[in-house]
Image (cartoon, rainbow, N blue to C red; front, side, top):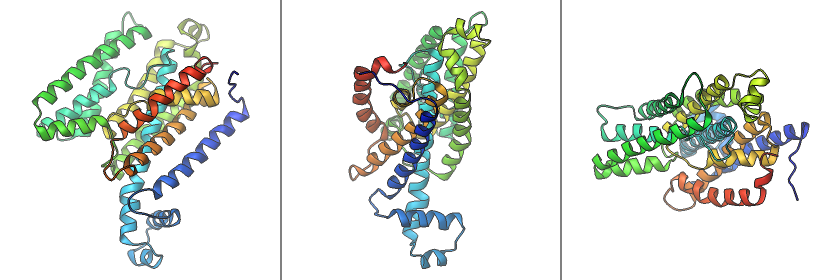
Length: 348
C-alpha cells in the first residue's frame, strides 16, 4: 500500500505537532540523568534564573544550589546545543539533497567533517600555534568547502556531479591530513582527537549555545523560506532555468547557508553521522517532497532525534557514550528499513 503524505493545512498541522513533540521531549530529557529532578523543579529553576531571583528566594522556593548547577549550568545548555545541532545537520541535509537531486548526500559532502577534523587535530597537536580549537575547526571546514567548489567551477558553471566528485576528493585529502596529525600526536592527544571525531556535547556551555543559535537559526529559517526555490532546483537545471531561476547562483546560496550551519555545528560538537542523511527522508515520509514543509520538518525531527540520542548517550551507562555511536547504531537500521519499505514513495 502506497504512503500518501498529508497536503495543505494538514502539513502545517503536522509541523505544529512536531514542534509540540519537541517541547515535550525536551522537558523529558531535562529530567533524565544521574541526578534525579522533577519537571516542575527543573522549570522552576529555569524560571528563577530568567527572573534573576536571588539565592535566598530560590532557596525559599525549594531550589537548591545543586538544582541550579545541574539544570542551568549543565543540562539546559547541553540540551539546547543538541537541538541546534540536530536542526543544523538535518536542514543542511535537506538542502544538499534538494540541490544535487540525490537522496544519499549529506552535509559532509563537500568535506565539512574532514576539514573540521583537521582543524581540530591541528589545535590539539599544536595548541601554541592554534589556541582556539573551535575557531580553527570552523575555518578549516570552510576552506575545504571553498576548495571543493573552486575545483568544480568551470566556465562559469558548477555541475552538481562535478561538485560531488570534488567534495569526495577534498574530503579524502583532509582525511589524510588528519591521519598525519594522528601519527604525530602523543597518546593523550591521539585520544582527544579520537573522542572529538566521535562527537558529543560533553562540554556544552552557554557561549556555545549563543554562537550556534545566532549562526544556525537564521540559516535554517532562510533555507525553509526559500524552499520553493529548492523545489525548482529539484526539477533539474534546464527546468529551473526555464522557470526564471538561475540554478548556479541559487545552488551556491543554498550551499553557503547549509555549509555554514553544518560547519558551525561540527566545529562545536564534533562529527555526528547519519542525522543529515536520515532526517530529510523521514520528513519527506511525513510531509511529502515539498521543501517548504520538508525542510522545517527535517529540522524539527533532527532536533528530536539528537535530543533522544544524547539522552541515551548520557544515561544508558555509568560513563557517557559518544553520541555519534548512538546515532549510528539507531540510524543505520532505520535507514535500511526506510529504503526497503518506503523507498519508492520518498519523492512521490
